[in-house]
Length: 256
Image (cartoon, rainbow, N blue to C red):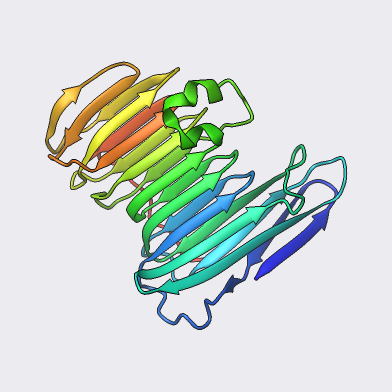
């Protein structure tokens, strides 16, 4: 189900109906999340304090003319599991100046996250499973991100924090912005960290780090002897990885 809003500037807030949710029954079982947002931030919140699925929007509109926004959310059930798919895009196919749809998605438990946004910050809390977040055009090909970093419009910070162990692949990439990954010491992954025009920092006081190849802008190492990748990239910004650092995880969430 989609919603449409109109206005002449300012911001509008709305809750998006999730197609297929009423028939889904159990809310506590983990589900995958797949988000595509043309322009705007994406926030995904998960944890024991969240009792139901919800998708909310905050729309920032351009001042030059009224615009319409279209946001849809659908629960898809397949043999391999359930997926919450959220699509936000300008109906004309191209965003106007000053236009953005900021999404907030809340679920009791997440088993894998995929996010694409052309421009905007991404914040994720207490998810589990594979994590794949890419901002802007340069994020699809991290090796060429230094060129994308020259375009200020393709920008967004990525901040992923969880009080759980991450033992599945992670890809966080932005052409311009800071990238942060914080998880518990029970996590495992082969760290492949790059900041083309910035700096890289790793904090891992607990656990076992091996095959380390440190550098100011590139850093490689295997945490707890894992081979699946933890790949973090920014064309211009800071990359920070915290594993088993007290106080860096996600706060407990209240239900809304």
